[in-house]
Length: 392
Image 1 (spheres, rainbow, N blue to C red):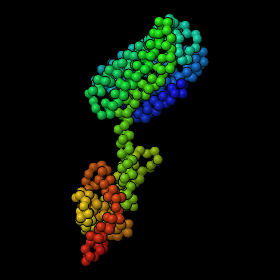
Image 2 (cartoon, rainbow, N blue to C red):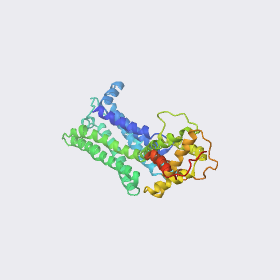
Image 3 (cartoon, rainbow, N blue to C red):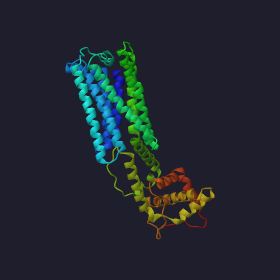
Image 4 (tube, helix red, strand yellow):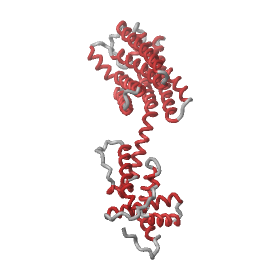
């Protein structure tokens, strides 16, 4: 059981690390704090950790108020996260955060005091809630931490469900994951704990609900809630990086053709550089190379290639891009052979230089990759037999 709990804590910690980019942003900071406290709750509640804490302090069951205090702080962090997520006037947000911290701070103090007043000399690593369910002061401590956690999760579920009906997209998905996690916590963790404790009050034994059912349900609930908080903020960034990686790869044929004429300085790069950084440098370098090759652009090559593409059944736009690929291939060949530029260079502007982003460059690279040999063959075959090859 301890290792499963540690695994859940590690997953939560990883989610917090991935999200921790702008610590001064209140929403990012409160999200990371909530995730970190959730991970600490799992670490503290593991039987191995409880035994180590008890041995270290020399106080039987000292790990119990420590875990309950962490869980209470986690509950408070969830409320603060909701407050920051909702936003509003800064003073109002600040006041609500301070009120939440004060209320749950008093709750933590009460938990510690009740444990100190109670008699819990027999170490219980897995079933403390039910074993001491009838012990004065300890009983109140158990009930108090459960009520504090219930208040936070029920509030989170109610507010999340309300907001989910007002928004869409990834934010809506995240909110429903939070609501689902909260309901799993309420029904799978809290309700089973309440049932097991009340059963002890009435002289029955349902300890299995508290020791067997509640822990994995708490892990599942925390993971769902963390996914709900993280995914709306992480997925767009991951999608952008994936698109950057894909576009960087698709530009490879175009870059291979023009890289020898680019004068754009290459920045220091490492294998861990973000795909978007690599894509930006390749895009800038390609545009620099296209500018350097412009004096070699031959309109006759482009026109012949476009006519050949149209006769082959290509659409006007496809024919244009195919013709531009042919003209660029010819220009790159001339530049590589160190031929002099044309006396009257073309004033034609490539489609790739007229659109924003990398879409135009990707189209041009696709045209080169699709049939680099056919482009040149169509250009040659389309030329009139009586026409002499152009000599720069």
